Image 1 (cartoon, helix red, strand yellow):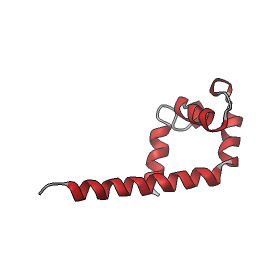
Image 2 (image 1 turned 90 degrees about the vertical axis):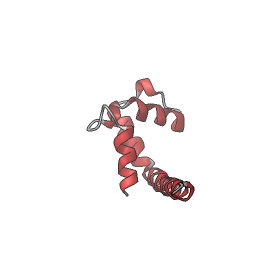
Image 3 (image 1 turned 90 degrees about the horizontal axis):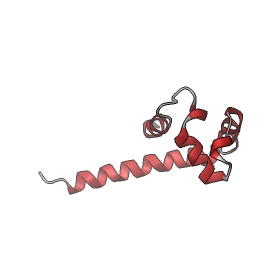
Length: 80
């Protein structure tokens, strides 16, 4: 859960309380859905988040798993 919150925090840098203004979030929505980033409004972004919540939660779980795997790998390759 912590890794998911960290991802969202980093993805909304510069627009933490207004994620619909985040250029990164707009770009990701555009690449995923085909909606044009420059024309996305607050309503569009929030609607997208609501519609795709299951996929987004799955993605956030996956990022946590990948982060854990990377940490385990880096620990196993460290030299004492």
